[in-house]
Amino acid sequence: MKKATLFLCLCMVHSFLFGQRLPENAQLKWGNEMKFNKKMTLSEIAATDESGYYLIKRKIRQELQESKKLPYLEKYDLNLRMVKSADLSKLDLAGKPNFEHIMQWNNQLWLFFTTDPGKGEQEGLYRVALDAQNLRLAGKSQFVMAAEDKKAKPGIGGLGINLRITSPKFHFYPTPDESKLLIVRESGEVRKKQKEVSLLLADQQLNPIWTRDETLQADSDELELVNALLDSNGNVHLLSKSQPADVAYKITSLFRQERYFFTLVSITGDGKKALHKNINLAEYQINAANIQVNEEGHLYFGGFYTEEGKANKSTGGTYFLKIDGNNQTVLHQQTEAFDVAFLTRGLSEGKAKKTSKKLKKGKSVEDSYFFLDEIIVKSDGSVAFVGEDRHEWVTSSTGSATGSGIHTTTNTFHYDYGSIVIAEFDPNGTRKWAKKIVKNQVSTGDEGFFFSYSVSMINNNLYFVFNDNVKNLGYNGKGKVARFTPKSYKEHMMSVATLDSKGAVSRSSLSINSNRNLMTITPVNTQTGDFEMVVYGQYKKKYRLARLAFDPQMLAAD
Image (cartoon, rainbow, N blue to C red; front, side):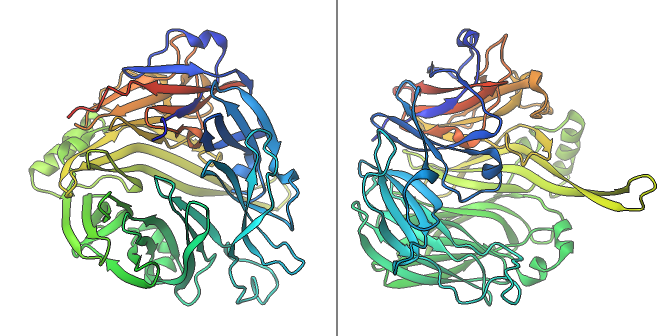
């Protein structure tokens, strides 16, 4: 397997190189210091190879708008020094290409893009090889799969007025051993409570093994593809969620419990057969769900639930289903409420006492509404659910200029990203523990650009990197934490929280005692191998990339 690398892009001055507190048995190696451009931002680490790392760079406005314009691609060597930058929009590609994906596959760097080449060529997804040294084209574009059929005129009455985004989405799911690549084209809209998806399974040379069109059923015109996976038996699994019509079409639902229906589609027999299963928990309502597979081809479906009768958006506990990937038979099912230690972590002393009293009286207590971001399978077979408490909302105010009589309405967008939530289970689905890594990130009007977290698994420990307040370095889990806001520069700190297999949490700083005011952009922080990570951080007008490496012998606690 490749060595793991967590890219820690840390923006700092030279004096930051001394006195830094790090996780136990970790070493940090810095790249060159670079100037931060307020109009541009690193977006993600797209690929790695023996010679270095390939990072996507965009204008900040394009990043926030999820623009499809071809980005910049920058190459950094193994010492994290930038050696080449290329504007991919300047490449000689047919039509008006839109960016889809960059990946390293079979020792070749590939750019995937959608375009209508014209001249009798088919509109759709294409791929082209890039030279790893100069980032220029290294061959001709090759057709991958067709674009969505245009069955209806766009917008209202063909006028081009769109009420919702209708562009198709392409998703890429490589197997860990890079032997197969699953590409899913998701239709941009739901028609008659159905969404079309097209699947292509390719071999190591990117030649098609099989293709299939499938229909996902919805309960309204709201449907989302949550995840897609390929198991060790060659079966493909799609998880989708939809809202019932009585919720999706009512504004009042914004102030009530969110309700979703989840459907699992398993495509077996080399793409010849499709199984559909609606998953529910009887007396419980599924809040968040995801899927993962183990080495034996079993499917894990799980997440967070709330009691069906609850009126507020909240989470009562976890659920776990182990499913046979060949026939969708449920092999094991378990639901478990959160305990008092989980429910009181991060609360003030007064609120913690009130919560404990309610539980002692036998009353039902639920926590915040949690999102489930991913399910991680560890090398010992343990399964970890990883999610977050996050909320985004809009407030409006109306005013008028003195004497003008003209009224204007101003919308303010609020972002509140709270604790990271982790639950770990044994291979059969019995929960071992549930923990919170308490954080408090709040801002307005910035799209939550500096919020959330990144996670890497090294030696079966989980490492979380996020922006924090310097006052929280010694936080022990009791009471509330100090708030992080992007504009409070003197309080900035990049934290790394370590969670071992017993559920023990420890917090360290990736900042320095005297110059600790660093801030990261979490999507850039990436695990690139088994024992290393690369992380992004900035300090005022400087930024830097660093490699955080761990001792391979330091396994998680048994």
